[in-house]
Length: 136
Ligand code: 5GP
Ligand code: ZN
Image (cartoon, rainbow, N blue to C red; front, side, top):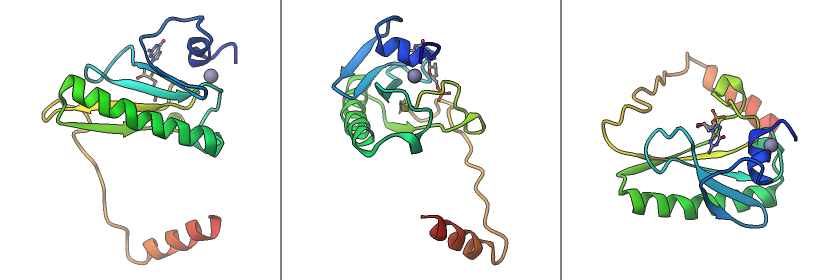
């Protein structure tokens, strides 16, 4: 994908602060971090969203994310860490090459300050459950 920023980083055409690399995966610092140490882990091959990634490559990404998460948390001394993965514009995805955010967190850092969960209206949870189960 010639016009994909992350493919160009994988190809070495755009520099990055590389943290991790193996056969399937690249990990580097996000250029505009939520907090210092905010990192990105992604498959080297181009896939737009999570559901397109073959299991083998996804497993490699998750294994690498775990390893990088541990190193990020230890090195910046964060109290917590979010593993975040956006799929589609509606979910906040700007770069259409699937990637995992590893975001070190501290109390009061101002990120994700609200989680606007709300209960299902009566009967709707069962209907949603049946639809999802039928689609599995
Ligand atoms: P998204 O909104 O697609 O989930 O997140 C894209 C992330 O990529 C953003 O956090 C943004 O700061 C980061 N990003 C965008 N362009 C570059 C770049 O050229 N280099 C690096 N290291 N990160 C980038
Ligand atoms: Zn790409």
